Amino acid sequence: MTTKQIDYCIELARTESFSRGAENMFVSQPTFSYQIKLLEEEVGFEIFVRNGKGATLTPAGQQFVTYLSNMRKELKRAIEQAQNFSSKYQDNITISLMVRQALYFLPEAIKDFEKNEPGVQITPLFQYENGMDSFLKNESDVVFALEEQTKQLAGTTVHQLFKSHIYLVCDKNDPLASKNLITDEDIYGRTLMVGGGSPALLRSIQQKLISSGKIEYFNSPDHDTTHINIAADKGICLSPGFLNDHSGQFAWIPYDCDDTFSCVLCTHKADQRQSLDTFIKVLQKLYNEAVAFPL
Image (cartoon, rainbow, N blue to C red; front, side, top):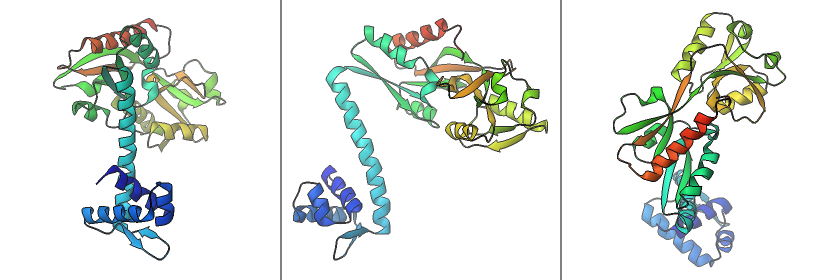
């Protein structure tokens, strides 16, 4: 199976026309049709049902083309990343994090780091749910995590980064937005968004509030959906400060609670690159200096 055959197959699925597909791929129709036929012979099943005007996907072909489309996007991304790398860099450090805002100072860290290490590229990898699994499979060099996730991990080094507090998140026009500190009593009578992959500490606090019988709750599958629900006046939520993108769209008010999230970076013990150590120290320095910054 060649990349041209993959592209021809995706294009035929999109246009359902051999003539239009061939035109869009800048080849003759016989060449286009022949490559589709070769692909079907290779995979061993009929991808398209031919008709007088063109072709439509079979059920098996529909599933196959979905897979091919995703694979082609990943291949395109890999080629683009490699082109960036080969033109300027000699080494690469990949850092996995669940959302962009988890490491607020990452852009500044990259800028400071590359002043002294211009040949080393820092590549963010956004993985909302499986970042730790990916890291343990050596698919990333660094992973942002909560310290509670790193217990009994073999072959890794844990680097302390910062403590993140708990905040109440609400619409800026909500009466709660005028407060400087939120107590449990302030939340009574409101609807609290819960779930969404909340860390264990946050789940225990949510459960304590729910068990009081003085609040309503609404299950929200993830962080972004929770924010949409807040903007739609469906409720409020409690959130770690490291998820605050500081865009000003919502009010983030400190919640009256002594518990914090210990945010860390994990690296592989076998990875002893000086550049990696330097990058970790750059991030640590930025967070250590951000004393007045809300985290």
